[in-house]
Image 1 (cartoon, rainbow, N blue to C red):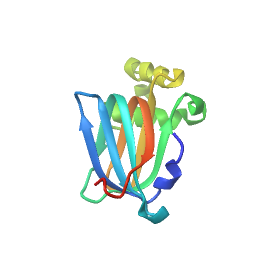
Image 2: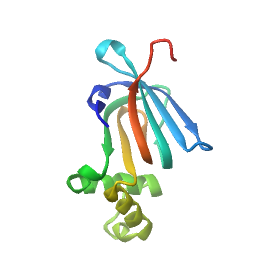
Image 3: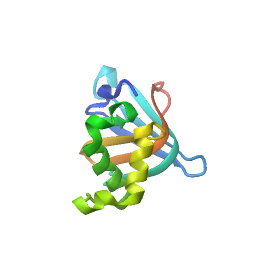
Image 4: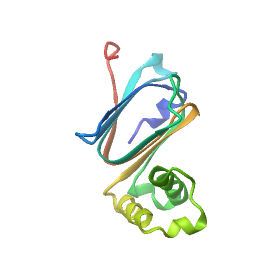
Length: 142
């Protein structure tokens, strides 16, 4: 997913979750580029967590981990994936947990991607899904 660098210091305006459609939309306002509004649309969601969500949420950075960058980011992917699945950071023995290994295999093969929104303040948002895209929104869409 290209363009994630434009989300540095953006604010999370809303998070829309559709369990029925297995879809999550995260709407943001960029700190730069004339306060442009963007939307991250994630479909085919396997798992999702928004930890420490507040009224004000400021993004530090956004990572979309996929098969192409799996090997160089395996530690970050593993830590974030385990947190998503179990709600805590992994200990060395946790890395042998079979469900974790299965999901890592799906990311490595390209079947799934891991999206991590790291905060300066507020929510850490982690999603495991098959499809993710970043798009611009019109000023009227609020």
